[in-house]
Amino acid sequence: MDVLDILADKKVLYAEDEKGIRKHITEVLELFFDKVVAVEDGLEATYEMEVGSYDVLMFDICMPNLDGLEAIKKIRKKDKKIPVVILSAHTEEEYLWKAVELKITKYLVKPYDKQSLIDALKIVALELVDNNLEIQLKNGCIYNPVKKIVCEGSKNIQLTLKESRLLEYFIKRQSQSVTFDDIGEYLWDMEVPTKEAIKSVVKELRKKIGKECIKNVYGIGYMLEF
Image 1 (cartoon, one colour):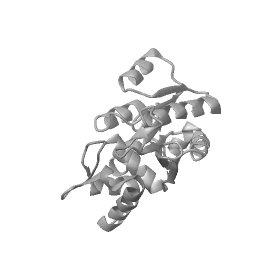
Image 2 (image 1 turned 30 degrees about the vertical axis):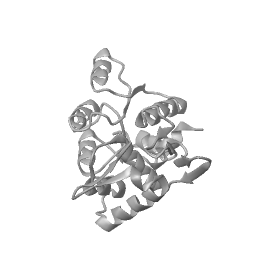
Image 3 (image 1 turned 60 degrees about the horizontal axis):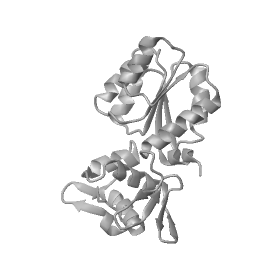
Image 4 (image 1 turned 120 degrees about the vertical axis):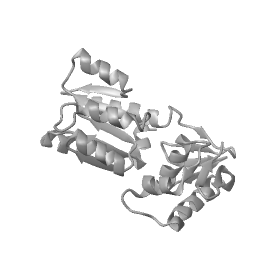
């Protein structure tokens, strides 16, 4: 079981101003993530976070217009939980303390090897599921975020990419109302799905995890019940 498979339906935002490094790391990230968006400075990164929805951030520190730490500081005002990996040549105590304050998941010092990056991604993957690889659902089914399957007794039910992405989104917001707009933005990126398209994904997910697990919240959207 490879915990990196947790990232298979996730989106990462990567910020790096050096073109060669950006191209190389983007290619590595594409091996593990469903979608990689690469930008060249902190200002672009904060804009992307305003208009899009991401699961993981990977930032360099020294970038034009807005450095990585300042960009993360802005993002943290709205999203305090998203895992962040810093990739930087800076080892000065000042930068390290700032990273601690911003609750950085991992601080990788350049130059780093591919294995160090992969190890950091494993930590990120486990953080995304709160280190829980067997998530108990309301009806006794167990969800495996690595294999993206729901186990019902001896039966294993495979989820599609959209279904697993939606279920994990619900799990992170357990017992909270999730709006149609929230789901649309998270699953469809820049597209604007119809309410019927969202209902269709929810319907298919319900078939696989049990209708009683996802409650309708009248006029708002849905809630995953545990």
